[in-house]
Structure formats: structure tokens, C-alpha cells
Image (cartoon, rainbow, N blue to C red; front, top):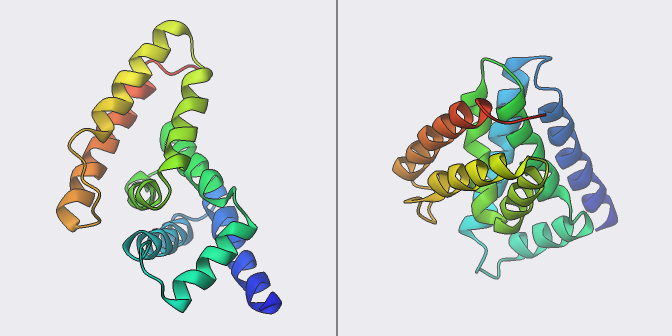
Length: 164
């Protein structure tokens, strides 16, 4: 069990580090984002099941309770602050992580809002509200596509007033 936990932790850590270095290689970062998306989707779809696989993944995730927060922060920061060509690829796991760990999304939202001026805080709250309106708790393709479109608009709107 300890060996499995170490392998799991190293795998997730490698994905996180690769996402953190998005500018190095677009293909690699897109594949890492896809892997993160698959893990988060699996966790969301099976969150109420009592399968041994789910229990094992939960145990691993609990050994690093900040992992969802770190992944959400890295993906959102990359979306908002980096100007890379593959921003579409990193939008996919954001919905999955939001669904698997809504608290990671709420924490990121609160942290980002706290860094802004009072005027920008209100604008940012409005943009986050628009982003999540009409989004279902589903990983169906139509919902993913709608969220990706909204996330693209969120990115364009927020980058106009966001202060570093």
C-alpha cells in the first residue's frame, strides 16, 4: 500500500509540475491536462460509489489534501496570466476539478478576489457568477463545451481589468 501511495503521489506530482511549466512544451502540457481531467472526471462520476478503486484513490488524495487546490490554482493562473496557444486544453480539467472538488474552485475564487481592488473585486465576482451560471453538475460533452466557451469569455473579460 505504501508503494502504491508513493507511485500515485509521484504521478500526480509529475502532472502538476508539467502543468506548472506549460510554456515548455504545448503537447506535453495538453496531455497532462487531459490526464488530470480524466482523474477528476473519474472522481466526480464515482464520488458516491463504494468501489475499492475509489476508496483507494480517496485515500491517496487525502494524503495530499491540497492537490485539488494546487491544480485548480495552477490551471486558472495559467489561463488568466499566460498567453499560450493551448489555453483550450487547460480549460477542460477546470470543470472536472470544479465538479470533483467544488471547494478548490471556491478557494481559488476567494483568493483571486482578495488580491484585487474593491472595484475589481465586484467585477470579478460578477465574472465568476457569469462563468458558473447555467452550468450543470455534469461532464457531458455539451456541458463541457458550454463551460469552455464561458471560460474563454471569462478569460477575455477578466484580463481587461485584472491587476497583478
